[in-house]
Image (cartoon, rainbow, N blue to C red; front, side, top):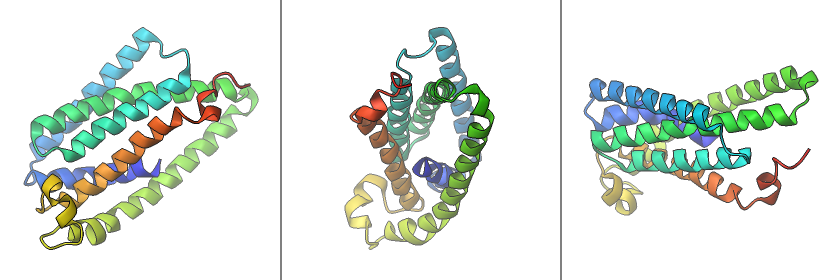
Length: 198
């Protein structure tokens, strides 16, 4: 999803800007993400996932979107590390459930082609998101969140008006999109019943 990749593209510069270029904190966040991902994978291995795999996809999106929203709203190492751990904890649930659906719905004879096209599309949209993220952060959100910026009066009390505030706002907007896609996915009957369809 493009909004997820936009958030990932501004993650590092946002943290460096809001922490005074604290590379030790950046490394700690990477460690928290790795530990969360491993814990999530271990939980999925022991549990086996939901019987309704689409619920795993949607709950994974909701959990990651909520954690990333808290991450973007945070302004301390404690909040960032905890939110990063919780965010990564959800990705094995989301990813393994999604892969299980694809493997169940696509006949073995065409799985190679289907997965190749899926991977290509993912890479194309990721590249587009990364191309969009920089200009959006530098030319739109960061200037808008400076003192007397167009958005500072509305969001300044939440994100501040210092360096990195615009990127934090963009990150939260992308995270909320992920969260809302997961929530509204439960209300789309065609999607909700995908496990029963053949």
